[in-house]
Length: 270
Image (cartoon, rainbow, N blue to C red):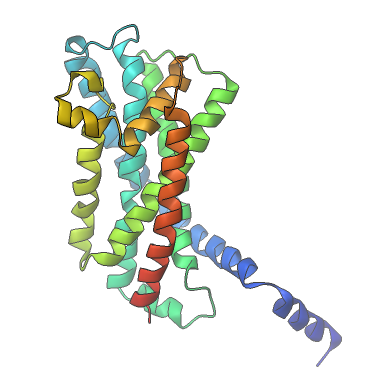
């Protein structure tokens, strides 16, 4: 064997499992991202539903909802933006269910790749998709009268929090994708969880207008803190406790859900 191949083998063996985990995850993330670029309807389908809600609430209900000193369109943008991130992460559920049901994961088992790489690849690709559709939603908001007061640091905080929130919801969606027994179930499972959370929050109306029990829940659930933090940075109002609580919720969810999803995935692929 030549010295070139000996050195190559030594370098390969010296690389850690962490290196190969990230390397394999990047390869599988690119696989999923190619599906997005070849299937642009995924981007528009994720963005279309929130945009429809945006126009509906902006022009149909906007005149009847009192948001105090903030115009309703400025109030609404953060809620629609977070709703889009939440619904977009549901693709993790469907894509994992498809890979499991169609035997694609069984094919990957025959390759020398990290078992967790497929999970990370799906979540990473959904993060890319959500960031692109998030930009689409923000762009549409300017067309209907949105006037942000955010500076450069505020925009950075908004997109960092958006990325963390997207990852948190995607890992929850990964767990659902590994639990459901069919592709059909994967299509509606996420909506059962996400739909109530987005409406029982401060996304579309101030929580002060809700009955006591709903208000108590809405003011203490993670989506409200994420929405309130992003809204404050967008319109220039004091962020209060919602800023650190939003980050804490997202990081906490990721810390809890990643090991659970990994364990479920390894059970599925034994």
